[in-house]
Image (cartoon, rainbow, N blue to C red):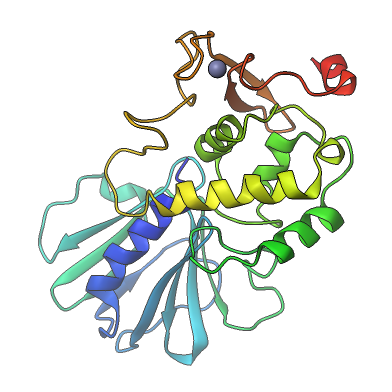
Length: 265
Ligand SMILES: [Zn+2]
């Protein structure tokens, strides 16, 4: 699944072609909400967490979320698409460029400032360079349920947005934190460090290329049964939580922190 860093890179690429341009074609057969019109100006392309927003005249915003399947492509006019046309969920054309959103499960529009804005629930975006970590900690306190593992809490986009499975596992390893420790067992200073490290990892991956969090790539994500880069212990992987998301960890560097979390295993 694309994480915050991927969506930010997509926004930068789309912005270079679309920002300040006039819409010459718009197609989105299953769009929910009002449609941008030919002749509308595109004001900006923005990533917020894992959401991509394209702003038009009249405060109209096209909102897309990639989930597991979606992606935005940018083509020169008349360039051959690299995906099949029937997978296109939105097609935006401006002079010289065509932006196509393929297979995204969420493509809808809303008016900026509307109470039902699809991004109103999101916490601070960890991909930006001025994250208010006090707000993150306060949102964690009010929104997380006791007993929830820190691995699940880090994925909660209402607390802070941008972290997906990759940076979740990488951050927990970097902080030597047991992924299955219940949130209430982790004191505020340790929580702050986790989100700070996640933000640093996300921001250092905004330039593109393969993701890296340690020299040579990733520390634990996708590395089950391989030796930990720090201590040589075999990396483990487990699906857990309501959505059975995968978590990778080193049992030696990230030992079980409490009896309660040991019971859950
Ligand atoms: Zn280790």
